[in-house]
Image (tube, rainbow, N blue to C red; front, side, top):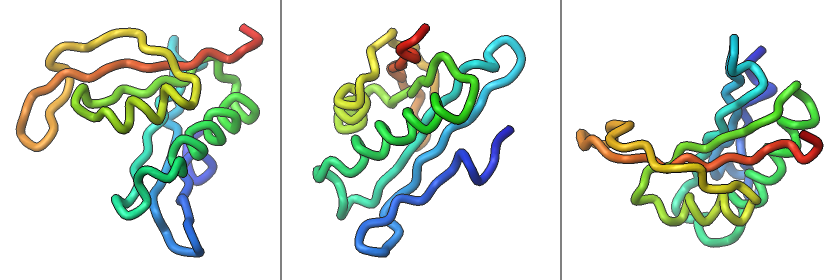
Amino acid sequence: MQGSETNLAIEVNSEAAGSIGLVLQSDVARRSAEIGYWMREAHWGHGIMTEAVREMTAYGFDHFDLIRIYAPIFAWNLASIRVVEKAGYQFEGRRLKAVVKDGQIIDDLMYAIIRKDQ
């Protein structure tokens, strides 16, 4: 099941500042979800996204039958890497030439967190 319960707005001072969501997987990956997020630049560097990732991760484990939540991150996005690391995600590996961003074929880095009771 996927929908409004897995895609949320992030508000700062009653203003939309970003969003965060989970993409629940299916079939053999049905106990995994991909986390994705973005934030307006005006709100970068205040710890807001790290807290949102922590909260969404807890929500995912509490409300869905998940074992693993993962975050593929563009290799050059050091700020996003720092966000997931501070939220407890672990580096799993580099996927070479895995994504296209702004017309460039680039690597992404896979980070994940495993439910503590597994």
